[in-house]
Image 1 (cartoon, helix red, strand yellow):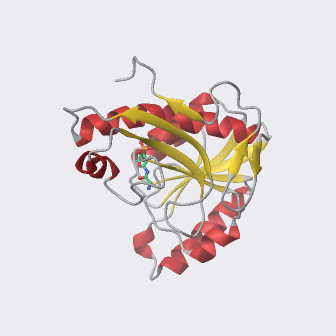
Image 2 (cartoon, protein in one colour):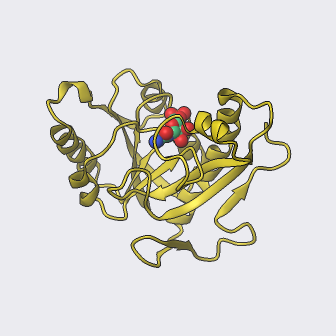
Length: 213
Ligand code: GAR
């Protein structure tokens, strides 16, 4: 069976969606850069192996990333799923795991890379917003897109209401993308483009259903 490690920094709701969806991946460990991440307690309750690696205890980004890579390697995973992992990774780290690092980002990339994506989407007046699952490359929040989910931006949206609508779709999208990986249906067309083979009528995008919040 395909194996994976999940990296988190906080509440870990995407980790939970991944684990609970049973996408055909054996999640062998959860690593957090914050020892107090709420998601770690949940993972431990599920019987998953957890590790906390406090980034503040490291003198440099490189030394933290080297320790993180060693932790990951100890699990020998096929893939590494970033689920709300809020650390910028060094190029050296990313190049260690080519085509094996997967991330979920709360915007329709390549729009709104970085932080505060929901606030910036409202300020920009876009009418569609969403989430993207992509493979990680050295350029921040870029890399081949595996799947996207779009939601409407409503006239009375606040940052919080829009974030909640996107998060509900993240919880559908990430498990779906993980299942496609587990089924071996993800093909790299080039270093920049992946296609999902036989992803059916819905394709590798999801529009929020009418009943979403
Ligand atoms: C999610 O919205 C995720 O897309 C985002 O952080 C949140 C984590 O929530 N990730 C990023 O912004 C990465 N750049 P969670 O801990 O409940 O999954």
